[in-house]
Length: 183
Image 1 (cartoon, rainbow, N blue to C red):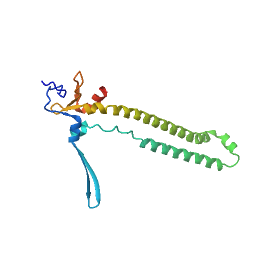
Image 2 (cartoon, rainbow, N blue to C red):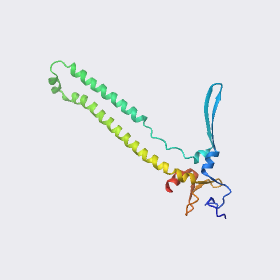
Image 3 (cartoon, rainbow, N blue to C red):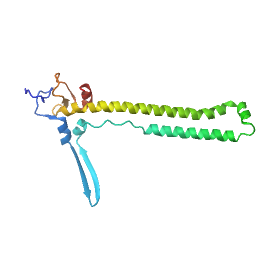
Image 4 (cartoon, rainbow, N blue to C red):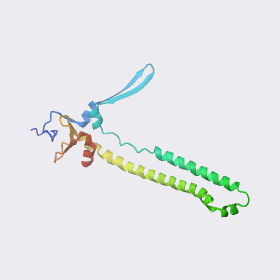
């Protein structure tokens, strides 16, 4: 058995061991093309390179929150406009019409208020989600240094850090979990 640090902890050989950064670089190809005034960019990546790549952390999708807030805002405006319309077109004294049946007036006034409160809560949740994402992104970037030291065994489809005393390893598909444990 070799005393090299890049020996696979599972099969104890190094003939099929390669740095993960090399696997990703050799399995990725991109190019810029220009033909008769038309320009384009293309890229391709092997499945293994894609599995071992250290990509950016995907950002949370905020489109649903924006659409929801916009819809609630429109509902609040329509109901408020309806309340103004009903109040302006009530015959006789407004206070007399309101006091005779208070329920419709309370509903008309409270719906915009409830919609605005919901909009405020959605905005608050989105701000908290953004803050959590920033923390996750920082933790994700801390895993980059161990990823750059990571090795891959083609024979066993495992990744490992060669300088670990325990000589632990993980299935290549669970690389990010392995890195989190060694950060």
